Length: 387
Image (cartoon, rainbow, N blue to C red; front, side, top):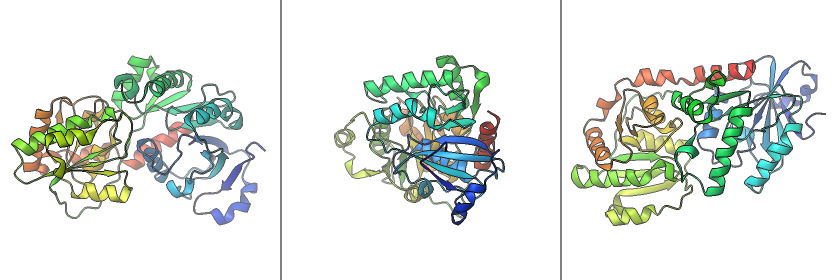
């Protein structure tokens, strides 16, 4: 047996038919999905994109998908895998450290994956050596090459190294924007012909009315690349010089790395009563924040895509974003683009959107259609099948 620790399913809607798995046709194409990097239910951008691609997957008759997961990972609880997707779960150990997971991925997974045609990873976490099967790696962005303090020194060095290795050794590379494809070609010297783009996507909301509350929303992991201090300073300037309606700033996201003391900055600026942190929140809680905000503000130093502005658009909310990397590509004609290091410019953008948020939604429908989830799912599964 190729996969001694596996659990079989014919799809999430057919679990009662599990005994029938033995009768599966032997000539099914087998594609592996490497989920070993997902260790908890608090999944951010990488997991969210795969979740949406799976939920919008077309019916595929001739392929079986094998999900390689840590033993404790709740695959069916997090991913709503449709009944039209034939799949099996392959249990791997639960890792106590990143080093243990990486060692397993490079030394054990290549043998465990024998019998596959293709092994796909949704992030830079794939075997560099893969005898007998091809690999596809999703390299979302090159943030560690552009934001020096994104991680600590050791992790930063490793991510830069493995990104270079997988960019060259993977049979195909998927990335999430034209901006990121350009970075891969120019920075890592990847042949452009082996790079595909699958955009992040966002479902259209069935909105009958749109309300614009008195708060601006920031969404993202709290880490240096998100440039949150500039957002806080911009909000302080807006509050001091332009705000006539007592707006607030709501910061939604889990603590990340970098150990920045945001509270000290907020207290220094005297805006403690008008800034709140939610920590990590569920999708439903985040939807409520999008539905009630005036606008999103995201002044990242670098983004491979930037999902929050797209999510905000789906709720009829404009965004203030950096005029760098992929963010102009995401917002199109909507919102306002600013220099991420110019807090005064961002404060004026907050003033303008606070006065007339709907004015900055021109081109919304066209922009959302560019990132339609069903189209991105079809493209993604076509790439997997053709590799």
